[in-house]
Length: 332
Image 1 (cartoon, one colour):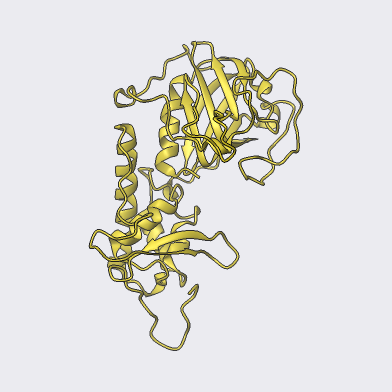
Image 2 (cartoon, one colour):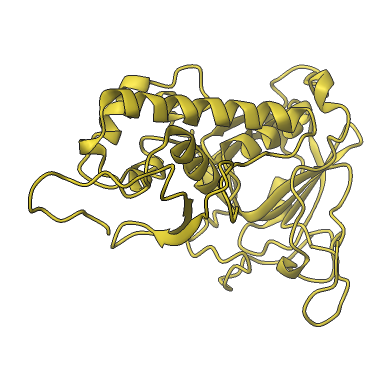
């Protein structure tokens, strides 16, 4: 799924529509009935880690529509965030308006398995927040639709179909692709764990990394590093010179501090690059050689009962730190 910097960019794309009323809805989602958003007002937009939260209310409470504008550096090229894989299309009618379809329990084409809230009204029981969790090729488009970049395996040129389309009273619209949506109460905010929050707590992050488990496991734990994904994990470990399977309990405070610094620095630079329309520059992720010219290794690592993620590392620049004594290295 998109990492923290991408979701922050999505938030900036959505923010100008805060204060406007939804006048028409569309999209392929059958689990979340798009028509339930008809006539609601988008009152707030927040981002927490890898999730985007949108608050909708039945009455206008925010002042004049369109009062939120994009930062100047987002005016150019603000119509899209990430290209969507054309093979992840959800159907053939990309602009079909939802008017009377019923909720469904069909499997989600994006691969998500978590259930979505299917209440009759998004404002029932205080569920005013639409939680949006993006898939690997998830994106948000403004006043435009994603187009196919290449033919799929069957040779068809089919445009990706948005999961949700929201047309607003101000004349513009938002299209959400490859995402899971569910109604929820107010989002639980943990800014001290969000790697792109000013309130991120370095000391708390250091304590988490000191666990007697491979640091690559801890980095992807959203309880401690909300918004951190596989790209940031690989880049931060390489730049800190730490083997992904090194136990955090064996690393010095200086090493752990360097790792946290690289997480924050790379994440911030990536976000700023997105605002300027620049591609993310990686040194180790999906590379065959590291910047020093050494061969890069690749393998899937993860907790025994958790998700396995592909990891790239340089065995020369990132030597494995072995424990002193007979105990075995966890996760190796």
